[in-house]
Length: 138
Image (cartoon, rainbow, N blue to C red; front, side, top):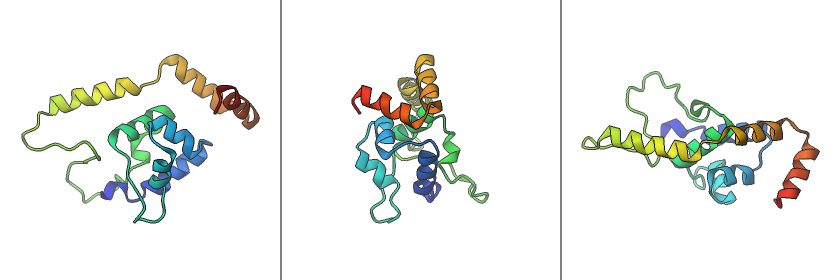
């Protein structure tokens, strides 16, 4: 998975820049916090990788371009990008896979109201964020 070689560092940088905890990312991606911690692990033996659904959830909910998380700079690579959980054999129908991907994207895409709430939450002070999370019971 050469396109995920620096994923753990990139994810941590993006998460910290957005002032998100591993728990926040876990909630966005619908996984356990321990799974997110394993994505960021510096020990390659303990590191795990997200699936396509988790990658898309994170990217859409944080408005992060996918290429910011992946190593796509290899100029010598002429092969097709294969993401975990999304592989095609020669016999697979690409249109079916694309329809499934569209359904998955529409499932996790935020509404305009949700995006506005997220924007306001990000712009508010740390103190206000803590109060909001307390109100929500987090």
